[in-house]
Length: 382
Ligand SMILES: *Cc1c(COP(=O)(O)O)cnc(C)c1O
Image (cartoon, rainbow, N blue to C red; front, side, top):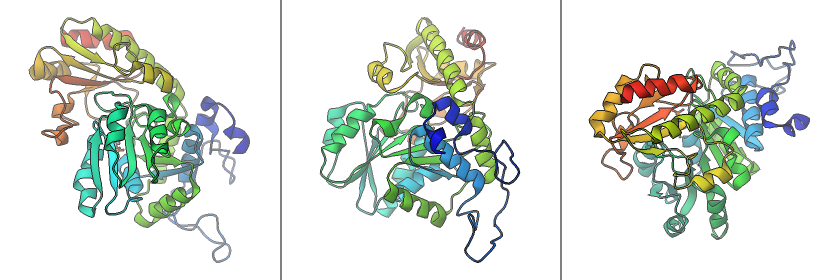
């Protein structure tokens, strides 16, 4: 592990946590489809029960830790299960300060689950440092950052928020949901974050065939608590799901390069289209946080949002009119998807401060040929 850990991202994606299997030398990490393990002597076994640990899951945990440049990784049955585990670090009376544009499920777990247990959440424009500073309360224990956000693709300056936190006398953990960027584009721990979470369902899995979540961190004591919770609460992923995410990760760097290149071409093309009012993509110089994105990401990812001039009816017509882009929720797969967040993924934030413009269309740009994708959008907008 240690010699591998010093290698480059592309090598880590393929090898970290995955030496040939010690039993028979299998080059691919086997799917250890077992619930329990025979013990040679009582209590003397590397593994005892599969909720606690499973070798396929261990490989995934070690691999993602290496990719994020962290010491520890933990895998869960879904992104929400990973987020839930991090929130269990909080106690009644604690406060979380979150991006005002968080994933709908994250908003929901804050407002409709954790508030019932006495954990408060409030939401702030995370790209405005003065607003963040002013919103930190005496009981704030966590700052919850998504960057880029969904679906407005706002970019928060992770390093600047971490510095701001360093000026607070009380312990405040910085958590980054790195789902949209993936560790290939952005490494929050290196920018000063304490905990990274992922919905591995998206880019890490990359093939729209698995639901999975991950946590990565450096601090040993916090890791011990989270590992205890992973076993005590039990929202663990099955070994087959861990295998699928491991396999997806092997091509993460290649896919993210193509997602980003395709998205850049499409965003630039959309900007010149007469029926498009606004294109939101962190790679465009017109994006309000383009300079921050350039500094903290090595490319700008595969997500684009755009607003059509014709309003909600036109947005629906375009989203239903594409032939290659599938009308679907989710994101991050090799195939391109299109959706209207206000009517689909973001219905749960209607009439809240997170409400999304109903004429906004979100694209998850896949790794097909960019010209075919542009031709499809052209006919749908046509
Ligand atoms: C999808 C998503 C989640 C939730 O992950 P699941 O795997 O669906 O539970 C959390 N955060 C972001 C940014 C997401 O896109």
